[in-house]
Image (cartoon, rainbow, N blue to C red):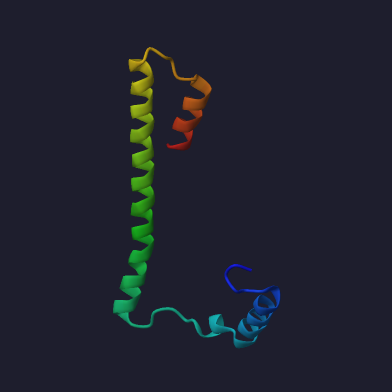
Length: 87
C-alpha cells in the first residue's frame, strides 16, 4: 500500500485498539469551565452550518440572476428543488 498500512498492520492495530479501549476512559469535561467550553462546540457547528446554507442561497440567487441576464429561464424543477432543500 502507498501509505504503509498493509492488511496485516491494520488488523493488528485494530486488535490493539479494541484491547486498549481508549473510549472507556472518556468521561467528558469535569470543570464548569470545561463544560461551558464544550457546550460552545455545538453552537459553533450550528453557526457554520447556517453560514454554509446562507452562502448556498446567495449562490443560487446569483445563478438565477445570471440566467435571467443571459435570457435563459432556469429549469423550474431543478431550481425549485434547490430552493426547497435550502429552506
